[in-house]
Length: 432
Image 1 (tube, rainbow, N blue to C red):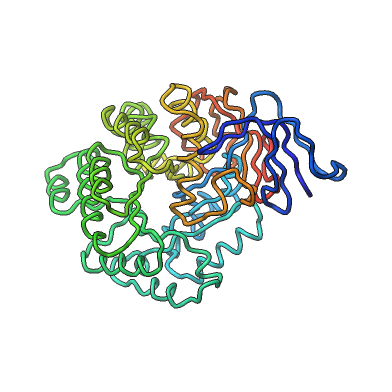
Image 2 (cartoon, rainbow, N blue to C red):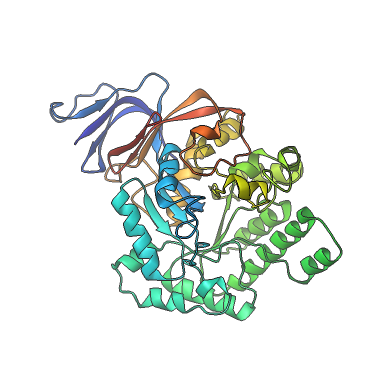
């Protein structure tokens, strides 16, 4: 069915204007001035006339989420995670490889993507582990991916390589993985949790998690930048959260390194005081931890000066029991837009165009996807209708995700997802 979204405020990374958008065969067929004649009969066409103040943006692109599938259906599944994604305005998503078994096979990644494609809600790209079983020694899974011919399901399924919460401990193996990733032209997302001797000494001395994790993030960020240099690898640093790690990325960029990084909504909006309020060893625990106010300000500064290329949720659902027992992570897909709209746009730090860049266009580019992330002729009609002024009180009981562990529970935020469209199909609308 052809769809016309009429006289709406259209916002992407370069545009903020009133227009009508015509969708045909899953793509953007026309962008027309307000009240311009429609170049085809309206009969048989779905016409959407949003209320005043509604904004049409490119659907968001998620670089970093955990769907726990296969292996942990009580936490999340492809089905529940996809419902959460479209409820949050996402049309494309990368899910991490720390599943059971580990997602270390191109065949398994292709099968998971095929299952998601059959569901028909989002475009899902499973991250492939750098080493077999995430054991840090065997990179043959990357060889298997390289052996798959271009155009096969195996090659098409994988857009990111990542060892997730583990770093490859042996330099030679890490460098080997970087070199193989460079030949594949697929970015490596590093979660930077490897602290080396300094972190081990801090643990032995009984230092707290916040101190140890800071050492780990800073050391591992510096190490990843150093080891990736000269390999030709596209390096991506996940969920930067410290002053130093962001400075390391900033410095590497200034030197011409092929590097990008992401920051998370909870790190730009929350601090260690929130973790203490929620419970450091339970609901407030996340990896990397919520940090000091100076770190939160550094995250915002990195967004404003371009050091941070994208915003990614690190959506990490847990059961209530696991969360109470200290499992780290927050759910974030269904609150990300409202959190970023409230803390960044409503506060006057940036505009919706820049937010669209961070949540749609830039992550699409990092994934090498040129057919989405903007509103332009011929691109996929992956779109989201939002009411940026609507007040929303966060209630995890309404989440589509099986995880309910949000640091924003009870908070009133600005920005509501009204509808999500993926390749021209309405996959979510006002809670349905």
